[in-house]
Image 1 (tube, rainbow, N blue to C red):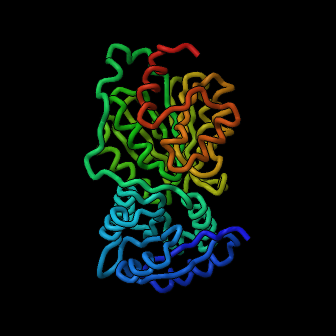
Image 2 (image 1 turned 60 degrees about the vertical axis):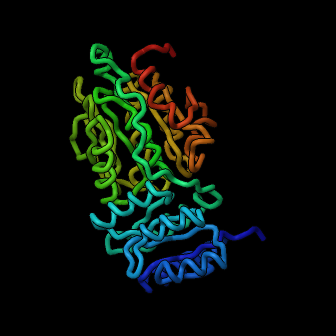
Length: 351
């Protein structure tokens, strides 16, 4: 029998520990080898049992999850999935945890978030991060790279352009690396990052502080404009629409696609329909195959597509699937994607 993925659940809630153990026990390839009510108990179990993956609550007594995560990443780096409540504080802390080396975030079960949906997503996330080599994370401020990549005089040539980005596991940091390297007058961008409801609000706010472009969570009817990034809200699909020369987004519910809402495929396919050759597609680190079919549709309509390369991905799932389908024109290290996007948008390259 194949080796099971060995998981330790760290949460001060006895109910959450019980639910996670019960739900994960239904998975043939996952085993909860221990639970812990706080980081002090968890520390000893982690050292002795050496799990493959840890789920970590970030709001706990005695020692908060952020402090524990910092120590863990320094002395015992291991794949960590953050478990957080659907609150502003919880989502802000979850984003901080992702910047410190955690690989995924999931919401605690609640009235608005069923145990069934949670268990499916948790199992998928555990499989996605299992085996990922966790690297020490620099606590320095992020390098913003070249600051003036599009001159104002070239803006007129790009006013009808737009960028669509899709990402999942490891995507919050990858998206940050791309967006912080783009100048303020970059064509409008729409982003799908697999993330629970409310967390995307904090994610957009954090990026808005770091980027030269304005960043906000998308609302239904928002116009896609130069200098602005729209982040698809968690638990809602975001589609591109067009009215005359104006691009705008349609934010709506709908069935899960690849177990996700928002889904990159939904965005990319709408971009193919309404932007065609005026679009640039970017697919970043993430589990599964969401986005691959959508990029095929974009390419057929004349769009140019970029995929993050395997070496710089946390999980080379989504980019790999898109490459396999022949949907990608360029495969690049995460630190090179922004400059290539600028070059393409400035029509320095003829495809």
